[in-house]
Length: 170
Image 1 (cartoon, rainbow, N blue to C red):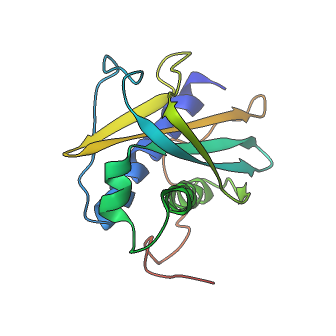
Image 2 (image 1 turned 180 degrees about the vertical axis):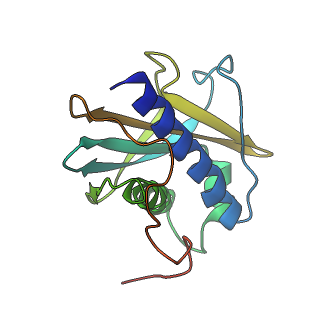
Image 3 (image 1 turned 90 degrees about the vertical axis):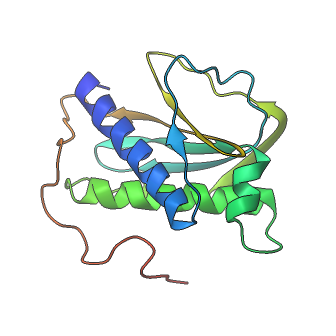
């Protein structure tokens, strides 16, 4: 993936993660690259695969228990909720990509659970770490772009008159 594509995509994922949690009234903020991911007790991770003509990969969202408990509807398991949050985050990124004329198709989210999940940072900052007063969330998108494809830095055309969260389809 070109450096420009990576920078643009990382920015979209990070901005949309902050907005997603803000919609659930939880303030998360990014921490610097020097902050270690290794000592965070991530308990569960939601992963959603995606594909398109120009890009394919997966988006992952790992969380400690606190952000899940603070944002989850009653009686929702951590596994179900982290999958739902990962799905909503990819939906937001998908809308941003669509406004850049990149149509993305998502798979069904799956959950990974472990004693201490630990995302690995490689090739620069792949994972973004966000902290809140009671826990941490880590998101990353691992993907490959087709050769010679350049993701536009900004909006090419407006994708939808609705904001995220204004419409729910079942």
